[in-house]
Length: 163
Image (cartoon, helix red, strand yellow):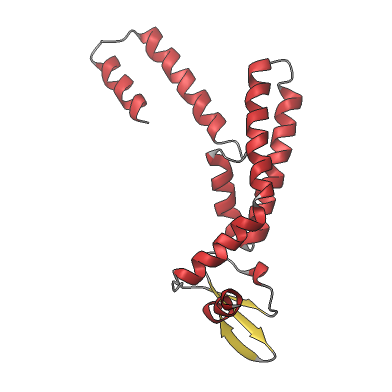
């Protein structure tokens, strides 16, 4: 965005030609569009994960984002198979996606540890009727009901990390 505003000012003050400005805009839009693809680690995957976190647990939304990334990567390879530069770029993104997939459990445990170390209060509640912490959601108070007793997430996390 910073470069966009610089080029806009330069163009308005006639320091760059209209052709140069239009070429810059076309490259800018291509990079912006590419960055919005739902492929991990691009920003599109982060937006997708945020949307999925509204409806699903952290663990499910994270793994679903990874699977959607794989799907988009396969579609990109099929569609752009004749563009070698793009295929190499997609392969690099595939390796980052595989790394994220391998670290899925570590990322989930990091989520749990952060919830334990930095407890927060949210407006909405998520009722969980089992001991499974995999059902915990972001931006919600997670309340566990076990044998007709209510436990907040801090108690459950304290029990998990104190062992």
